[in-house]
Length: 139
Image 1 (cartoon, rainbow, N blue to C red):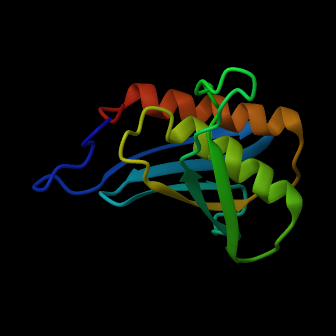
Image 2 (image 1 turned 180 degrees about the vertical axis):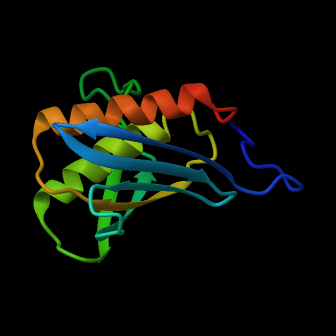
Image 3 (image 1 turned 60 degrees about the horizontal axis):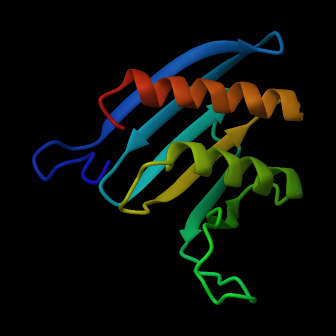
């Protein structure tokens, strides 16, 4: 996904509505040239707005001084709304899925408003976002 949004193309948006844990949930992903915006809402409004930035890390094995294959590290910052630890977890997990093959390392802007949260709900959201990615031209 080196250049998902070309110079002449403009943003690409994919959206869906699903029932998660019996609650209507809207999920929208928009790929801009400089960032990816993800909206997950059960209230039809943005709720908490979180900026997620993927940091490049290079760690080395202490015994051999060889580079390790590391999982990406994400910095999260709540820009607006409730700054609760659970939203940082959601932000990191959603950014890891949405930016999985994004070589440009675009930041993710997540707007999230859920009636309740749990690991099961997070997994459902991540599955739906993965489906949005694979059903679209953006890969």
